[in-house]
Image 1 (cartoon, rainbow, N blue to C red):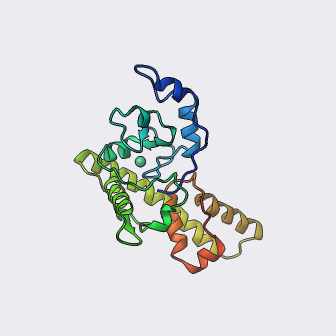
Image 2: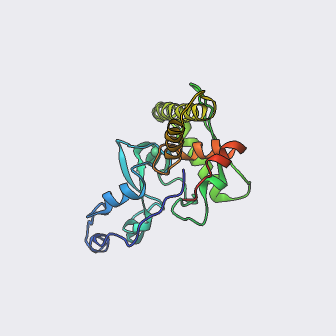
Image 3: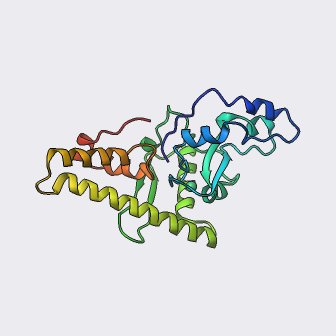
Length: 224
Ligand SMILES: [Zn+2]
């Protein structure tokens, strides 16, 4: 999970749909706007190019009409994460609130080897929102039911492949012998592209950078 900038103002259709008896919150430009704002990625697991897209209510609406049609409450998630979250988490960190940087509050670690498990942890203890977000992320990457454990294993496989590819780029950048300036610049821009909010599993790569003094100097982390 990383921070996301939600564009404003809200799509005008939401106010119109809200007044209808069975209005649709996926109206007008809602879907393309969410797709663009969330970089076509699930905001919880950071899987990119998802094929089971859900428009999810960050705060469960439970038939509260204002929450149901509130643009700021509409998020873009995969079915696996939306289903895991359900209405069980009421105090999560809001990734669209840019005053709190998710990757400053939560540490994301994974080793780039098959069957490794992600380690998600709070930087400081004592925040209900941070603890609850850590708990949701652990549930998402581990799976809470037999079916979701299979989905989580598939998700972790994608995560590990992405992290291994990122590690390979770093290895080439620092250790590959005889690189021309042009080749080194190409690898450098590829590394920066993989740290962009639109890349998959960015939070884990941000933490690879944050954990290494040399990486931090050469690839400073941008605020989102
Ligand atoms: Zn997800």
